[in-house]
Length: 407
Ligand SMILES: Nc1ncnc2c1ncn2[C@@H]1O[C@H](COP(=O)(O)OP(=O)(O)O)[C@@H](O)[C@H]1O
Ligand SMILES: O=C(OP(=O)(O)O)[C@H](O)COP(=O)(O)O
Image 1 (cartoon, rainbow, N blue to C red):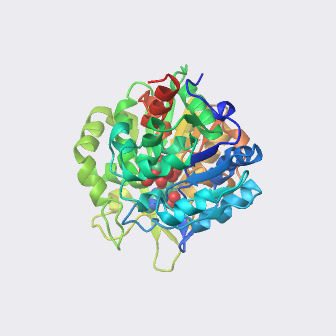
Image 2: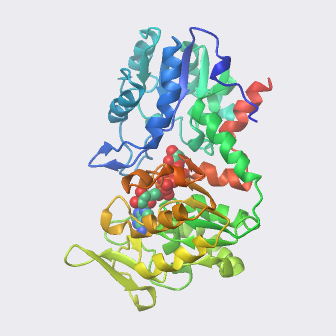
């Protein structure tokens, strides 16, 4: 059971400041619809239908990355899911934002600009420090309550996630409630047979530390994506480097090199790495190469190869539980979807307990016509859900709990 207050406890006619997680894949500069919009729309609709004035905060990407954009397009997608207008103001806490907030009427919804465009948001700091920032101090007097629905960002100590509960009455939204309960229950669940984790995606830094901490819970890891290539690099193969303008590998390698080497050393028996990889061939199609035959760092690899896909199916079929965190390849491009879809299909065909996590990864389920009902839980969280599996506290959840306990 959760130990925080929820939107059921909100006083009537409140001016509510709501933190969502609408962080999405960006294609050609535009956010792509995904499960996060659909799930958060439930909270937003409920608050607006109840007659509250609803102001939304969310982030997109990180400064310096290609996916760091305005939230203007997010407002339109969210409006379609909510079934109400969602106004947008290109400001976080300046005069334009405050004017739009104060002009809002009962039942109206307004989305503020990307929180990460504000300098106070990102540097990780304690809730007390974040509560003192100009961002929090300027916005808070315009509201009666703060609602956090962003479970999937709850592992970050950012101002919009941990600062407001110290200065406003704080509540959990519906996504926060359901994800918290599902993931906490998974963390304490025991399994009789083998437990497998499929690890991929781009945020290798988020998963590698957790792999170490999941030592007792997970019997084998099947690797792909960026983390998989970094492990292959640690095993001596010339892959997992930034080539052709990529910036996914070298910085994460420097940051995690020692940990990767020690995880490989201590848990090598439990870790399966790709034996072949796929890349874009000279004719523009999918080409594959055996990992042992790669002798220079020339190509960028975009998926695990077909031998690896077949190799990973067997351990999945033998498992009592399978956890997925991150895609095995760039599944958004059909040519490089085999690894991700192959793993998801194998999971769907078995009756093991299964969780698919990640805002991006869970999108593969509908893109490739898989049935959500074939998985025990599809989480819109990635990093937060795997941290929850280790039993590690989530700072944004802790502040909600402390607020409810009157601390
Ligand atoms: N080899 C790869 N190179 C580049 N991107 C990859 C690779 N493998 C997987 N990806 C990308 O990883 C993304 C998912 O990454 P991540 O953000 O870590 O997971 P999630 O959003 O599911 O938590 C997918 O959108 C996919 O395109
Ligand atoms: O998408 C997110 O995390 P996820 O990719 O682990 O699901 C969250 O929005 C956190 O974003 P961040 O990893 O840029 O801090």
